[in-house]
Image (tube, rainbow, N blue to C red; front, side, top):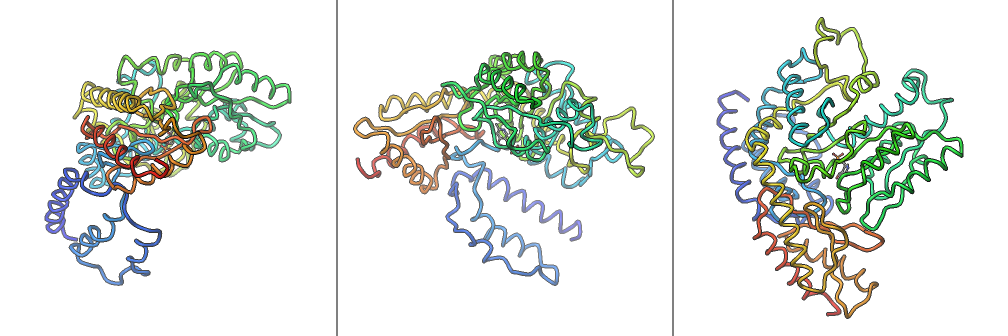
Length: 473
Ligand SMILES: Cc1ncc(COP(=O)(O)O)c(C=O)c1O
């Protein structure tokens, strides 16, 4: 493609993008497609000759868009959001245009130094402990794996890296029963053995119980195992529960364990000074992750990973082949040594665009608004009387179920999956579910920049309509 055509097509694409962002609420949030529908429309073999861009773009609109789940739809209340914003999208266009591979300082000095600066900005914005160092990773799963690997290396004086895990004993890792599955995945990949992950009981707020943690550590020590690390969560996936960081951190210090804090979702909330108590005790931990790609207007992927001891991180991941050596390695951050991958995207640019476009106050205003919408939604459900709120509404997530008094638990258990399916079939909203204390639970997150009170009202109206259509009324 010549640049003259690129220029013309790019203008057309940007128009499409702006229209999409304006009209995304008019698409069905969930596409009405069956498995294989899209595949059936795609030729089995790649084209032998290049095709006109207009044809490719036409197929994008005809085949791809109707098969997409619209994550930026105002009715997207499922899982956690992966919200975005126009400045983030614009930066992503520039990133793709520069197409830089930012593995070391020399391969893109501005990318390396911007990353250093925006991570400092994020730390400041979110009230993180001073003196920590930050790096951008692709996902929280990767960051958590990095934490487990660094914990493993510190505990073995870097012998696992050198000689493998043989003969080092069995290491145990602790988290709550509500912890995200990425921890279990990390434990598997780090060679620690899934059977050595202890999922500690939670309290009635779904937060880890420190006394149970202490007992589990003691039992493992008595059995000759080697307690290694604890992962605490700020904003669990099912209910946004917050583990008691300070108590857990004291335990970790007393026991000599690595403490990694998973704030993948909840971390964004501490941009609000009044929500800093969520990370009270973080300064005693070893590592922390949160995802600007979930709730901080930065399109996927962009994970912020912070560590107290940068040297331990580097010593775990550093590798120095001749072809990557430069004369200034001692003076700069070579981010290839701060994690697993060598090649790195220029993710700092979109974060910079977002932080500058909204400013701390703009971001705070959006987060605060989301939390208020969740409170309003929860209050409206309770006012309807036939609903139960199944977890504290800590942030912008409401966990609830339809529980009419004239029916029993077993019937609630069959009605709620049906209610969820009906709601999602409307095409106007998308909610997901979980189980809390064994109960089938509907989850509604308010995390779209476009979410307003009108969307709360819309969701309530849809709930009323769909409840009326349930059997056994
Ligand atoms: C608490 C928590 N931790 C970790 C993750 C994994 O995030 P990522 O997709 O960035 O690996 C999630 C995903 O929703 C999460 O909710």
